[in-house]
Image 1 (cartoon, one colour):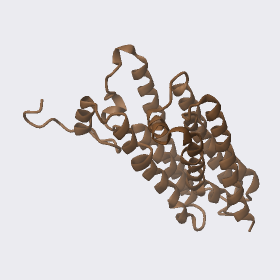
Image 2 (cartoon, helix red, strand yellow; image 1 turned 135 degrees about the vertical axis):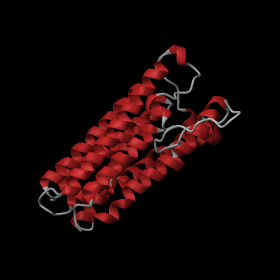
Image 3 (cartoon, helix red, strand yellow; image 1 turned 90 degrees about the horizontal axis):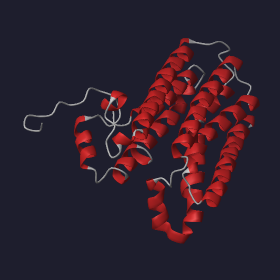
Image 4 (cartoon, helix red, strand yellow; image 1 turned 90 degrees about the vertical axis):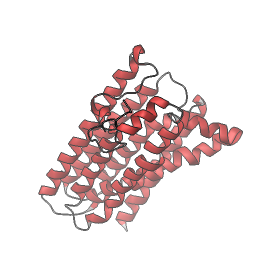
Length: 266
């Protein structure tokens, strides 16, 4: 019963945080702020669980700290990236579609749905801190940390590379196809999924931890099919012939060497 209370309280807390984000978005008339609150929601859930759960202290600390490092970096990145800019085109399309009702629609379609996803994706982090044992670190803990570190490094590097590229006026209208972006059209999203698969491997160290595979599966599907790869390419780059050429040679997600142009295409 106590564990169910922790799960339930965390869901309400995430909803409250995103509700605050919604109120700020109304004042700013820009719901892009939801992108900044995305990372903060995971940090909130991780630390609420840390102080409420009675699991193995070292594992609790690892999970909470890793989520905090990831969430804080993402919060800073999104906040800096969106500062002084207009509303994200993806949200702009929804605003046009719903018109005067968008102020209310955004509460559910943008903010509260994100709170629910934060909670679902964090199920592993919550359960890993609640589980009473084992009361020692295992090889799965260290393997998970390694996978997390690889994902965190890839996501951070990819975001940094793109920021430098887009900040150069000479690159206006061009497609970033260099460095990590030469091997994947969305290396930042690939890195983010690795982060959550790493956290899942840590949770595998506790009894019955395998059920929390729902967490990395949900964020992987979300980034591939819902809010990430598919949505971005359908809204921002659908009419860009240069991006279509980029699609033909570059993996959408998992990094791999770019395809060589077929004879006659060069």
